[in-house]
Length: 430
Image (cartoon, rainbow, N blue to C red):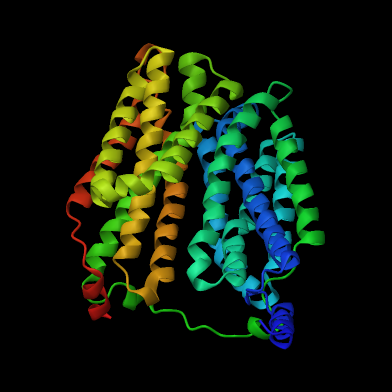
C-alpha cells in the first residue's frame, strides 16, 4: 500500500472503531485484542456472579427463615427486572454509547452483590437481587459493542467470545461458591462484588467507546412484529418459541430447587452443589463448544432436540427416585447433556427459518421466550417443591421434577409438529 493511502486508512480507523486496517499494523491489532479481552472479562465476570448464586441463593435465603417458594420468587425477581429493563438499557446505549452503559451495569452488579452479602434481613437480599436485575444489560450491551468493532462477515466469530465466556463463567461460578461458602454463606457474594468492582475499573480506564457520536443519533425503524409471523411463519416460529420457553421453564425449575433438594435428600451444602452445577457447565461447554457442529451436520437440529429431550426426561424422572450419589450424578449429567443438546439447535432452527432482514427480531423473540421461562420456572419450582415435603410422605422433589419431565415431553410433541421452510421459501414469503 502506498504511504499516502496507508496514512488515510489509519486516519479512518482513528475516527471509526468499525473500520478495519489491513496493513498489518501491530499496535492496532493489539488495541483490538485488548477490547475483546475486556469485553470477554466483562461477560465472564457477569456469568461468574450468575453461577455463584445458583447453588448458593436458595440455601442463603433459607438461613433467613425463607421457604422454597420465597426462594423461587427471589431468583425470579432478577429475571423479571432484567426482562423489563434490558431493552431500555440497549436503547440507552444507542443514544449515549456502549461504554457508559457497561460501566453502569457492572456498577449495579457491585451494589447488588454487596447488598446481598452484607444483608441482615431478607428484604435487603431481595433489593440487591432486584438492583442487579435492573442493571442486568451486560451481555446485550457487550454484544452491541462487538457488533460495533467487527465487520459483518466477522461478526459471528466475534460473538463467539460471549459463548466461551458464558460457558466458563457457569463452570467457575458454582465451583467458587462451593469453595468460599466454607468461610461463610456471604463470602461468595462479597467475592463476586469485588470481582465486579475490579471489572468496573477496567471498563472505566481501559475500554474505549465503540459507537462514534455521529452514529448515535441514527434512527432505526423496528421491524413490525407482524412481519415476523407473516407468510406462514406464525406456526413455524410459534412452535420454536413455545418449545424454547417450556425447555427453559423445566431447566430453571431445576436450578431453583436443586440445592434445597440435595440438602434434604443427601445432606449436601453449597460446596457439593457448586461442584454439581460446575459439572453441568463442563458438559454444556463440551457439547456446545466442541461437539455440536459435528452432531448437527450428522443428525440435524430437529433430531438433536429430540435426543436432548430424551436425556432430560430420563434425568428429571431419575432425580427424585434415586437413593445413591451415583444415581444423583447420573441424573444431573443426563439433564446437563439434554439441556446442551436442545438450546443451541432451537436457536439455529429459528435463525434458519427466518429471512435475513428478520434475524435480529426473531432471535430477540427467542431470547424473550427464554427470559419468561426463567421467570416462570423458579416461581413454579419453589411452590412444587413443597408438595410431598413431609418426611412421612417420602415424595420430596417428585412433584417438581416430574413436572419438568412433563414439560419436556410436551417439547417433543411440539418439535414433532415442526415443519421448516427452505431459505428460498422464507425469502419468497417476505
